[in-house]
Length: 127
Image (cartoon, rainbow, N blue to C red; front, side, top):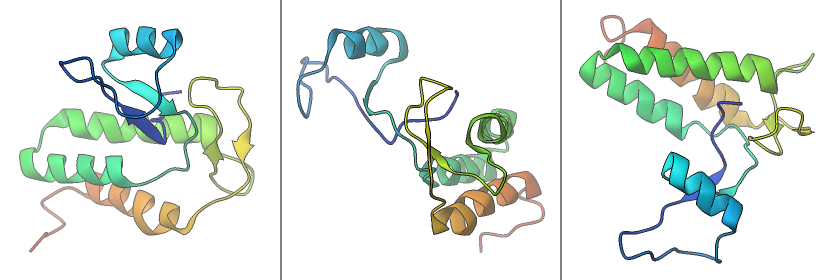
């Protein structure tokens, strides 16, 4: 789906893992992607897009605009309903059921950081 998980974890260089033991499927995913998904639901938290906004504002690097555009495409494809946008119960399965809820930070933060990212540093002062 291109949508990040609610929770994820890393395996440290000494092979230590915080939390319960990981499954063979999680370990295979880790080998390919560099992290383990520990909670595959997504309730559309804003932190990744907030970090992306600040990275773009600081660097002007096009990849951050590309990341924001990719997020919008994934939201439209997998989270859009007839009345708004909702979470999803499993980010690795595009047919997974949706969460029948839109939390306030979707409007207060997710959309704000997307707007600010595309508005650009020349139009938005962080001072």
